[in-house]
Image 1 (cartoon, rainbow, N blue to C red):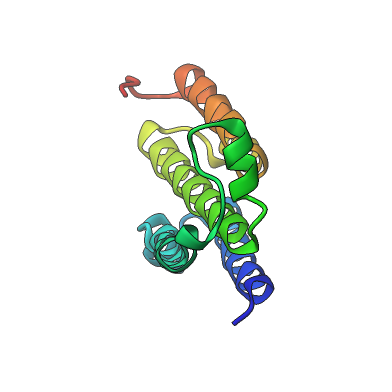
Image 2: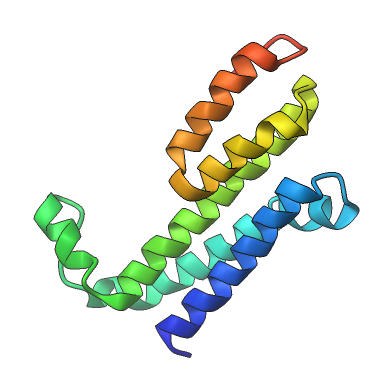
Length: 142
């Protein structure tokens, strides 16, 4: 399978999962497949396979910015990096949904945070943590 095909499949899986947690967070399928961690774990498994198969074949490394830039000139390393983002951002988005439900925060208020988490990762997490601090109906703990 080509890197572009895997990219398309991983993106499609992640996008469907994001739509489910944003639009149908209480649906039993969403809970069983996404909020349980299933899709983030599936993406993580894909990432791990790519790392094992291809990271040793890419030039560069993590010890300096120029080496990271060199590492990400290899399409398989970029694909692994992208799937890393997809898995972690979706994991955080799923946590936001579950946590908001436990804290009594309206899902309507969480949706913008999910959009930012989907598009900008840490900025969405920051937004959710701010929302959590001010909109929670229960005591906020780490």
